[in-house]
Image (cartoon, rainbow, N blue to C red; front, side, top):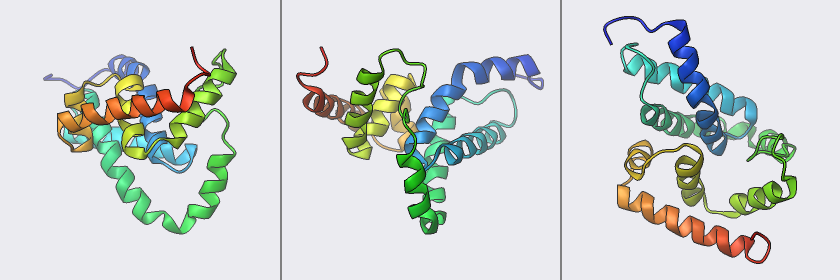
Length: 167
């Protein structure tokens, strides 16, 4: 792209991708407000890395969220107790409150929260982020085969956690 992107191009890109980025940022952050800040900073950083030649590739934004989250976690440990209380107070952390099947959403949310983080983040990127295993691998800085394995193992764990309840 040889020109500055238009406001409409940015808005369309954000409309398509921001919910996925925010969902992934929520996996990494300790509160919804931190997730929103993390996502915004990651989008700006990724756009700068893309030399402002248009909206950055989604995989670059996911990778930036991942790296920034690690930095944030190191800085924010002193606020862990307060933020843990805020996290517990957020019903619908995994799903939007508009989801019709609230009981099913609550069950899946609980199961996802019980998964190890390495499975949870791959499942989130694959199912909600729409990334390929190659893009997940790039975002998390792991081999693609590891991403695929973590996805399979994570789904197996989800099946065990929801067995007999979901059909």
